[in-house]
Amino acid sequence: MNTIILIVIAILFLTWSIFKSKEKTKESLILSKNLLIKTFIEIIGVMALVGLVLAILPPELIKQLLGNSNEFLSTLYGAIIGALTIIPAFIAFPLSKSLYQSGANLTAIAAFITTLTMVGFATMPIETKYFGKKFTLHRLWLSFVAAILIASGMAVIL
Image 1 (cartoon, rainbow, N blue to C red):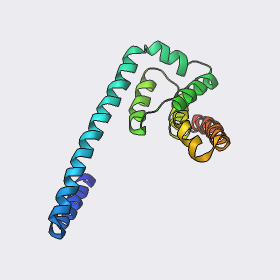
Image 2 (cartoon, rainbow, N blue to C red):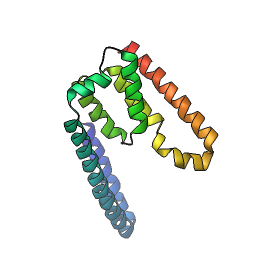
Image 3 (tube, rainbow, N blue to C red):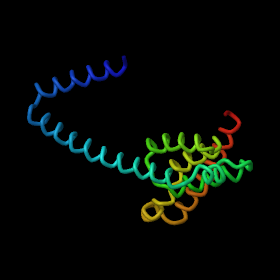
Image 4 (cartoon, rainbow, N blue to C red):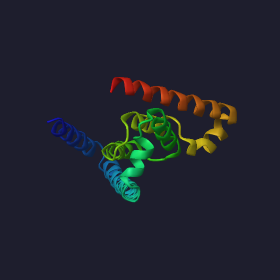
């Protein structure tokens, strides 16, 4: 029902835009179409890469690293993997489900998602350029520790 309401609202605004300026509306629709195609191609590429990685990594290895009996180590591994990985959050959630189905602990998955969104060692050079090395290292370290604490809190909740 919500989807139908949103579509109707979008159509109403599109109609209003056409009456206001046909040229600008046409230009916006062309830009939107191109962006949608580009984004779709990127999403398919990332999903294919995630699928390939999951196909290559046997579930036993995933269970050994992220689902072993030592929850602290599996959480730490999940946090490290998340900190070093660059994937969009909308891909991380289905990936996390696949990891969970392969035997990963929920705490390790929480650490993975949290560090994926908070830490980001891969963007360190850009951040260092704008904010300086000291600030960047402090932010990364504090974010990593906070992610471990958040994952530990999730372990208590879940």
